[in-house]
Length: 131
Length: 191
Image (spheres, each protein chain N blue to C red):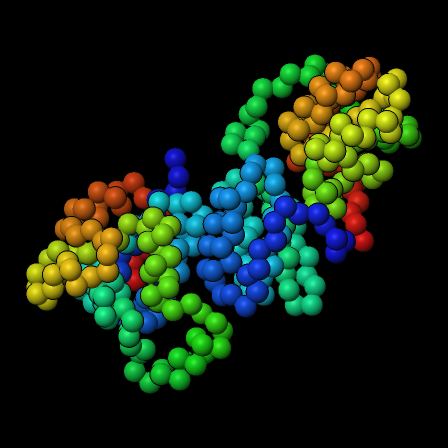
């Protein structure tokens, strides 16, 4: 049976997005089964507009140039790659209700579910991560 | 060492983690089992990543060369269930038996039927490279009575090679088991 990687993404900054999607795509490319549960500010990472303009932490704006110089792929590119590699992306229904967000406002191909949807995947995961 | 024959070359130069791994996976999906890929990368982390990737996916990491700041990783796509294939050729010697014969000073004909890239990085000293795909066209290099020791990585390809040699009338052929994956004797590589 293949390795299962379960990730919770609960923060919405650019650094958070890289942590989540780098691990997710690397794991999926290594033939792991990967699911990410996006909750609270983590929903930004899969929001149609927001994921194109994720903020750097206050005061760290100069690092934007570092990303460019090191030829780091953009978040939209990593999201696309994650989708292509079959990473399961689950938006948290409760947070969406609280923030009054509809499924249509998120990128295509996501699922929407509650905590149990994630727990059901994570219960026999080999690796569980929270960002 | 710079001219290793490969089936595909993948350019990941200038790409950062996790792109070299993602590209390698996609390229590997298109290859046939047994084929060898050269992955060119400038990401220093790819040296450890590629090895970890191979370990987890079951593909065979052969080695890495560095040329002008470019890392060239060599990988061979494994067969599904490569190590479990039933053996059919009955005449075998173990790695240890072969090693003792060599230490006894015997001059042996050792045929290494792996791909050239595998042979280039680590082989038994004095072994002749005869990639399995070329074997049939090179039968004239040995006499039918010669004692031939055939080696690959796990004993599977060499088993097939032994069967082919036996079919062609070679009477004194031995499959070396398990082969290079368990070889503890001396090795040499291209300089």
